Length: 146
Image 1: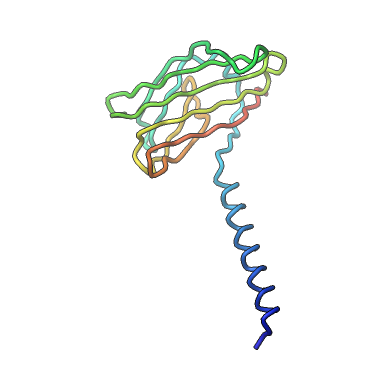
Image 2: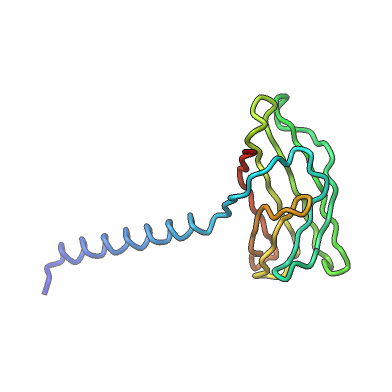
């Protein structure tokens, strides 16, 4: 039988390993986008379910950025007949001096828990998110123009 010090060391290693696995799983679960495209002039944002049904739809309009050198466009997402009481918004954001990198994000409220939702901009799939138990789904990613 191991002495108490060895048991303590083994327990510490087990905790460290568990924390590492949880952290890696969390990082892998973060939304990532491999989409490339220029969404500065995107007109329409839609959120679709796993079957491709449009649940929310909105049109982009200029919005106030966080800083003078930032351009932000926002689409308030309204439910279609299939979207029920869901609501949300989508955003395209970039710096005036660096338009080749754009931040795309969306959030949805009141979605069915566990629903996999896809944001499309002008018909092109950009991001996916899974709704939490409280019905909130959100994702963001940096998108390269080239």
